[in-house]
Each structure stands twice: as C-alpha cells, then as structure tokens.
Image 1 (cartoon, rainbow over the protein chains, first blue to last red):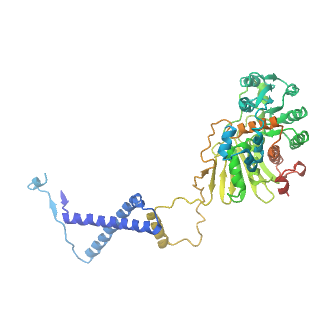
Image 2 (cartoon, one colour; image 1 turned 180 degrees about the vertical axis):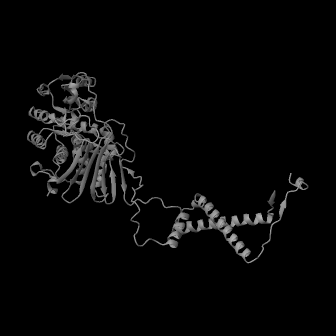
Image 3 (cartoon, chains in turn yellow, brown; image 1 turned 90 degrees about the vertical axis):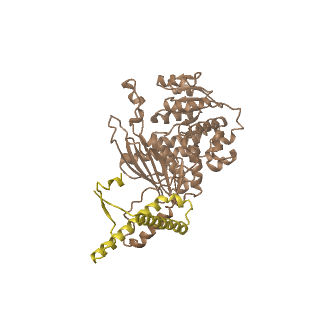
Length: 96
Length: 429
C-alpha cells in the first residue's frame, strides 16, 4: 500500500503556517479591541473567533498554494516531489 | 402586606407625603389619631370574593365584622369559619336595621349592587361595594350622587389604587419619566370556562351569575373595570369615545355573556386605550401596557423599560468583521431595512419595586390595603379624596364599552354622566 512520507521540515513549515495564521488572527483581535474600545477580557473571551479566523486563514493559504501549484503544473514546472514508498515485505520490519 | 410594609416599600417616610403620591392614600394619614377607634361592619354577600375580603377584615384590629347576610346558606357557613361570632341574615335589609353597624361591604352579584348600596346609604351605613358598582350607567350615577348627598364613605373594589407597584410607577408616569403615554394596551386573557361548580341545577344562575345577562355584563364589568381605571389613571383623563366588538366564540355552553371582547377608547387628544379579553387562551395573561415615547410600563409584571436601551455590543472582533462586510458589500441604499421585522425589544427592564412581585402573597395586589383604608375611613368618618370618583369612572367606562359592543356603534361618553372631577372635568372637550 502506497503512503506518503512527509518530511519533518514540511510538518514544521505547516505548523509554522498555522501559527502565523493564529498570530494574524490574534493581531486582528487586538486591533479590534483597541479600535472599538472593547474590554481587554475579549483577548480570551473572543478566542473562538480567533481560532475560527485561524482556520479560515490557513484554508486560504492552502487554496493559494494549490492555485500556484496548479498554474505551475500548467506551465510544465514540476515542483519537488516527496518520496513515495511502497511497503515491501523486506522492509516492513522498519515499520513494525 | 400591612400598612407599615406598604409605606416602607414605597419609600415614603410619613403620612404627610401620601397625599402627594396618590390622594386617596390620605386615608392612612389619620391612622395614629384613630388608634383606639374601632368600627363594626356587616358583610353582604360572603361568596368567594366576599370571604377573601373578610379574611383581611377579620385580621384588622380596628374593625369587627359583626353580621353576615347572604341568601345562599353554604356561603354563610363558610364565612362563619372566619368570623364565628357574627350574626347571620338571609335578608340584607335586616342587617341594615342593626343600628350598631357602621358600614357594610357588598360583594354580591353585579345586578344587586345598586339596590343594596342605595339601601345601605339610606340606612346611614358607610359602603364598600365591589366593582363594577352598578349594572347600568344611570344606576352608577345615582349611587355616586347618593354618596355625595349623604356624605357617607363610599369605597369601590379598585384595589390597584392601593398596589405599591401601581402607585410608585404612576408617580413616575406623571413626572414624565416615560415621555408621552400615547397608547395604553390593556388585556386580560385566561383559558377557562369561568364556571363554578353548581350543586343543584336550579342554583346555576345564582352561582354562575357572571355568565348571564340578567346579572352581569361579563368580561367588561368583571375584568375590564380594573384595567380601564389604570389607563385613565396613567393618562389623567377620561376617554371621550368608545367602540368595540364582542362575541361568544369558544365557550358555547349556554352562557349569555361574551367570552371574547375587544374595545378601543379614544381620548380627546387622539390618544388610544385598547382593551381585549379572551378566555380561551392564557398565554399573554393580563397586563396594562403604558406605551410612552421614552419608555414602557407593565405594572402587572412589575416592570418598566426604557426605549433607549442598547443591548451589549457584539465582541470587537465581530464588529470589525461586520464593518469589513459593510465596506465590501456596501449598504442597501435603495430600500433601507424595511423588510427587517421590528421584533420586540430584548430589554429585560427594571423592577418597579426593585424586586420581582410575589403574586403568591394574598392581598398583595392592594386588596388588603384597600380594606384597611376603608376601615380607617369608616372609623374616622372621612371620605378620602378621589377614591369614589375613580371607582365611578371605572364602572362607567366598562359599562359604556359593553354598550358599544352590544349596539355595534362608536359611543360618545354622555355629558349627563360626567361628574365634577379633576382632571377629567377639564380634559373632556
């Protein structure tokens, strides 16, 4: 059965992207609190809105990258492929 | 609620201040001077309402209920449980012959009020008569004139005049805190057939007298009478015209009075008071909504609400998103928000007395204080101002409303039924 091996560098990059999205969301919340003169407790009482914004921003970031990838493919650019491993009996001991 | 608690709740320090709030409360101004006085009362008609009143009178150290009169023996026997030493009579006229009795309390069917009250005045007795005080407008006027002519005390069963919630909030209304009261919506809804159990068929019209034309005018005289008075109290004037409709739409069980009535009372300056009573749905209960330009009052609920109430703002994050949305999509400039329903305000309001009214306390609607005020008035032989007049107009308004329904016409309040009473006398064109 084929499976995708995601290198730790990529995982770090995705987690970093998520963190950046969260920081942007929290930044917007801080801006809104200051702009509308809202109580500081909204830093945590609005955390669900911030998390929702994080998810939306991260989703937008994924869609943007898919678009870029798709357009690049149209023009024949082959981005770096991750290794595809096929599980073999001989190597299965590595995963058991 | 006793008198001391009543004064405390109103935040009124002494009896002198009472006259400033609601003039009939001056009945209590003499309460210390008359501490050693005691009056003797007779109860005519100790049915369910009568016995409710009797319960308060029996506890009042300033009076003694010495006689009971009723044509229905079970009512007499039940009343004797409350005042065991009272003499009983089948004929109220025998009770009136007792010279030692100072005053009477009349809680009989509506159609009998006039004759009994007139006979009581003739016999020199002070009178408390349950509302509505008479069956016709002419009888009502004659009764009022008799009270004026004899100078005897005359109270009517308008207990809201002694309800602290109403007294306090009417003060606020008259100070203009709620702006111009341009409309009053009064209603009383319940979902029951209004019947009492009848032990024998020949007693049907005696016990269920509220359901038959010969003895009652139904919802208008039994319920509206209370609430119309609240509207005129708030507006400080008497309506000039009334129109209405009524029908038996649900309880088609042989009754003769309407179970569904709607009336509009119009004032000389165009303001309106609506009255509705339906006894096949109880969802909205009863209320007298005073709709002011700055606020709304619901005294039955014990609350008032200001119009400028602003709900807590949305979180700043949401406000920011909404602002972005407006910038991106723009405001609808061609039609505004006319399709948005103007749903009822979510303003939780404030309690008139600071706390929610406890309706489980018997007599807390002003009934106990009303009986105390009557006893005080009988002891001092002094008629408090305006109380007879408020009762007079409450009855006249419910009677003319009923007449408008029956005739199917808009009726103008008759000139010859007006009495010399401020502010009504100056406000009616």
